[in-house]
Image 1 (cartoon, rainbow, N blue to C red):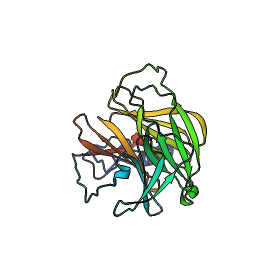
Image 2: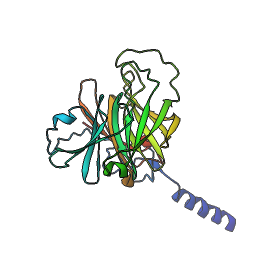
Image 3: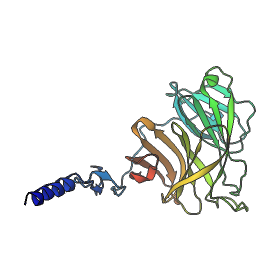
Image 4: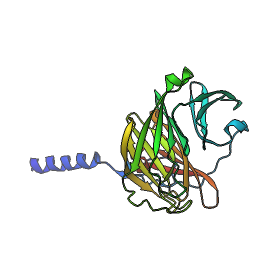
Length: 270
């Protein structure tokens, strides 16, 4: 009899401490207050936002294609032949400095990201024919930028699942990219998939050399991803993009597991 009672107590405590998968985000319409583990199932009502303010950028950065805030200033670059970094006043948007990066070529610069010590420019625009074999990321030492003489090294890469390099024609590939974030030890790319309207996440080391970007996950965003930002200490990723009807949107990704960014909450705005 005593053994049966003990068994019942053990079962009770096991059930009480069991993890309950479900939606753990209180702002979700599918929030489950009993859930203890976020399984990525949260659903959100439609939402939209409007900019609080905007400024007109100078002609010098009319083709701006990447942006970060660092050292109290905004840093950007152009999409095209220009190989300068531009430093902007964070209030007025005026260009306060331009920094040349010696020894680099701007084939199709599409994104700018950063970590504590470096800036990273993504030369991986690939919408022309989808068959570039010279995709790269330019890694720039921040201290050298402050000194006004930028020094850089190159991270070359290919996608692990791109085996066909036949020209696709313009805007007809799933191997275009305009979005990148940098973590403590890796670079993550979010592709701009013209055909599927999804995005795939690829990971590669952030060390100079030649690497193969490994496919990690794919998610149907219903549009084209054109940029991203990462607040690493809060573990939030923000994607920006637009739909077939050119309607802009954001995706807020948070409460994800490790660096599996689409495993948690995926809240679409717009």
